[in-house]
Length: 167
Image (cartoon, rainbow, N blue to C red):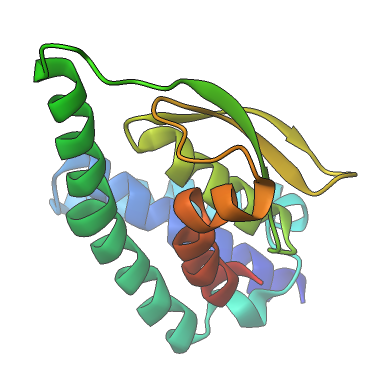
């Protein structure tokens, strides 16, 4: 079990190392492998509880679909909406902090959805209440204050993808 977890963390560290170094030179590959092994062994018990999930190719496909949706649909829509509000002569905004319940289970899924909400222009998660299973989101143009309706507008699609990847 520990070996699978260490391999999952080490592989992730290696991929991140190569992507951020921007190089596949022999030096960077060896350095990436060594850093991945060391960090995988040190942090595996804290990061990966079920290595079978990490190596499930269906979850990786859902992760790719999530990234495509996020970067090419959600981000574009949100940027256009915020630009409209900035450029409109009357600056039509209706800011509010709304309660947005969530239905994902794992800490990774909760975090992924919160990050997706925060990184999308016009919304920022200002608090997470795990007991109430809700985010508190500052919304630049609140369309509703009703929690379930706010969930539908803000986080429902992010939860769909996060559930498939992390839960």
